[in-house]
Image (cartoon, rainbow, N blue to C red; front, side, top):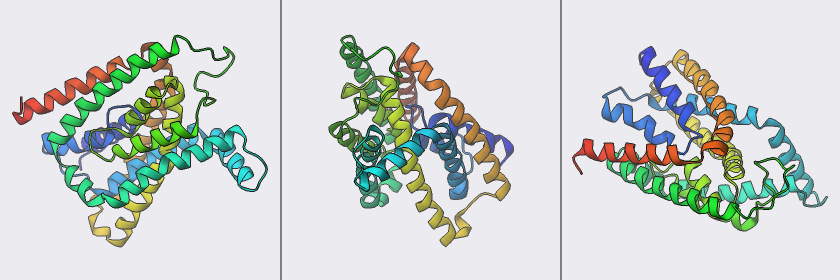
Length: 281
């Protein structure tokens, strides 16, 4: 890969992993539309490590408190708020893990279809817009304490965790967007956008970690499929880390001020543009 390819692909991963626009689709499109060489499994693993490090560092204190609370609950010391969040994360991760194990072969085949990416980009973009519209109406009657942090997970429940978890399994379809579909599901159940986004970010930790372990195992078993040098992987990880941590920081402020409209429009424009490129419209 050239330096341009490394920088562009790393930025794509870092910027889109936590935005509701589908990072997997954006990583596929350069090779499909621009004829760029496939970046290879090694580079994919590296940039995912970068985004994983970003969310772990940004939410490090939260993750530690959640882990402590969950372990305390397991040892019989009561179910506190942090433990509840921890168990909700586990519940919401299970559907995606099961779907990934059951449908890995089919997902690998679909992953290269620009047509599927285009239609899912449009479809889930419209669903995101609907969720945002309905959510604003629900929150007009919101009575949360003004002193409560805007991304509070006080309203998180077992039922919401199940719904968000089932929706997260759909993110295995290219173009869906893991962050987008979990954010959509959260808002459809009445969670504030900032709360749904925070839970989505926290959920990314076990999902990205599990995916990274699986892909790393493949890489260790067959190093020839890496497709990238150590220098390319290191640079990719650093760039994706820096861009991802910036997105996490500014995304909350952006959606509180501007909502989801820009992401809905972007998804519709991208999806329609891809269909036009394919000659399907």
